[in-house]
Amino acid sequence: MSSDPMTPPGPPVQESIQPVLAPDPTPDPVPYVRGPRRGLGFFSTVLVAGVTALVVGLVAGLSGYLIGQAVDDGTVVSETVVSAAVVPLVQSGGDTSPRSDQSIAGIVSAVLPSVVSILVEGGADSGSGSGFVIRPDGYILTNNHVVNLAGKDGKITVVLNDGTEIKGKVVGTNEAYDLAVIKVKESGLQPMTLGNSANIAVGDSAIAIGAPLGLDGTVTYGIISAVDRPVTAGTEGDVSYINAIQTDAAINPGNSGGPLLDAAGRVIGVNSAIATLISGGEGGSIGLGFAIPVNSAKRIAEEIIATGSASTPVIGVTLDLSYTDDGAKVGEINQGGPSEDAGLLKGDIIIKLGDRVINDSTELVVAIREYAPGDPVLLSFTRGGVTREVTIKLGSAEPS
Image (tube, rainbow, N blue to C red; front, side, top):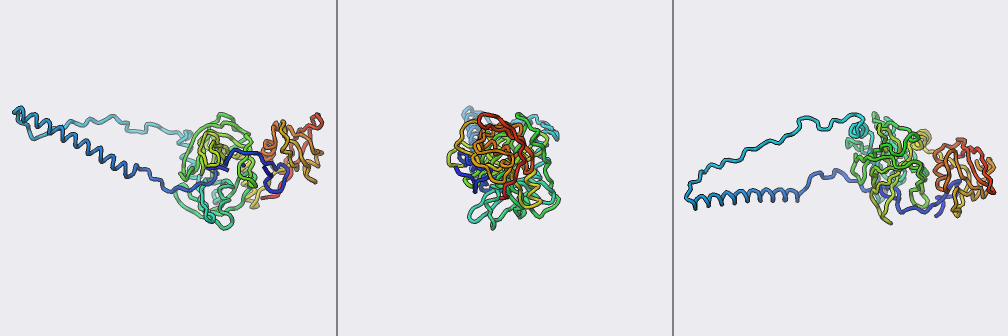
């Protein structure tokens, strides 16, 4: 995956903030690689041939030397050369590594038919990413940044695990969550089982599957390194805020949109971003990958399939980005919004949302997006040094 991070994206909304990001954290589509050569190629043929010729030359030379020595000694040499007997090496006749259904190999074998590669063409540009089947009637979940290259007139091709290529169509997207649903005219597909991202813990096993650098069906394995990690990904005007699952399972350009699985083979996240040490360029995995929690992705996907778009929860404020202490400072109150109804004022410092402590503006945004519009949430804030609490009913931003 490659990467994609101070001005609010579009018109200011309740939690529109523009943090300074490490260059290119989002895994963008990458050129798709078809049918990589698995052999060693021409030079290996030359090498093997050269070694063979050398061995033959040595044997012939040694034989000539021995014959010459025998002639010099006046000894008669038989024309029959008896070669040494070939001793077979011991080899197991069975599977040396029996695999249970609960093993990594067993899990991957079961879910690979549900993982797809996505080829995107738009104008003079092209790229690729990953995705996975969420309904047997052809619905596939991926990242918004994978499909947005196609624009309105581009082409999307979905490549199934068996190599079948099918035309795909974007059903809808949500840029705020970096999610998209595409549809193929195919029935009987094998959907993946969705897990519960609220139940994962740091140290749990994690399996990432996708097509990094176009190498479809690539599997990497690691652990959950952190949860509730505030991550921003994208470019100015197209920034996504992710309450991310962090993993050390290797994620690279092209893994975008692929599934992150738990030890039972259930989807717990959608791989979306990586941290990179390369400034201004495309970097590879350094063991810091980030996935969108499946609980959020499930709601977005369901809304897109039902209506063609998905809502984004808001509290109806603009945040003061000049504030650098703990918490998120309210810059402006949106008229008629949830915060005005709840009695918040400009200058209030939001320090907690639900059970989550808010350290800065970015964390407030991603914490809000763990909920859905209409959800009631307990919000704690300080005003004049006094801590107060209100229950706020989340509003909804205009669909992108």
